[in-house]
Picture 1 (cartoon, rainbow, N blue to C red):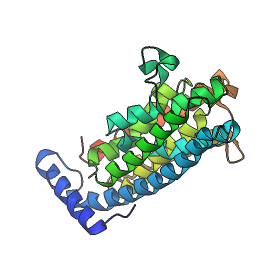
Picture 2: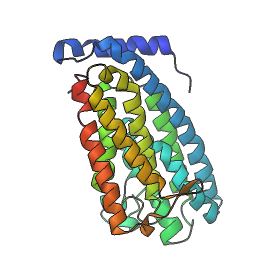
Picture 3: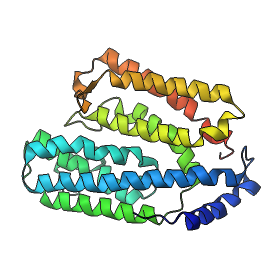
Picture 4: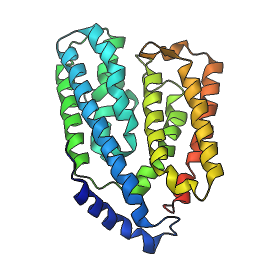
Length: 275
């Protein structure tokens, strides 16, 4: 995906300019252009990885190679999890790519149940790829469409900055319980994707906050380090332990680290005058 940075910077500057008159900006609107441009590049790179990984995954599903498809499922999802604040701007695609059985009247048996988790159910709960070809094709088409839409999008700065906290809040609210990857128990891969996306946003906007509030930056960095250390305990090879192996005590420690980080990151938008 090729980005035209001069044009993108002008579009961002135009979008950001309105903030000066409507928000009590802690930073000049033009100061946000650089981090926003860098974030769009980051998302573009993640999208390229997502497209390639999803294609390999769906090809394995359509070929009926269950073990290969299982091995590719969690890595394919990580890039999506990292850019979820932007992906969720397109609610129709987010539903089609990442919704869960709970969202459908007949659960797993509902013909409308699509995306990654429908395939996950087939591979793990049924140990079969039978009938998943059309689901895989639709997933691939939706991921391709997501890439096209995001490439044309001028990112809302408040959504991007708020995404740092939103990614951690989602882990705390719906993922610590293990409900997301309930058939494969590959939840820790998703956590890592959310963590990476959150940390990237913070790193890009950190210089704009640090000059006025170094104590806040130091505190957030310490909390990122704590969560990183906690996640690293469950790494195994290039991936992670299955989530069902974590004890209740393990999950409470993980939840504590996630919640603490989310609470701090929830202040980031305000510190940049984007509330």
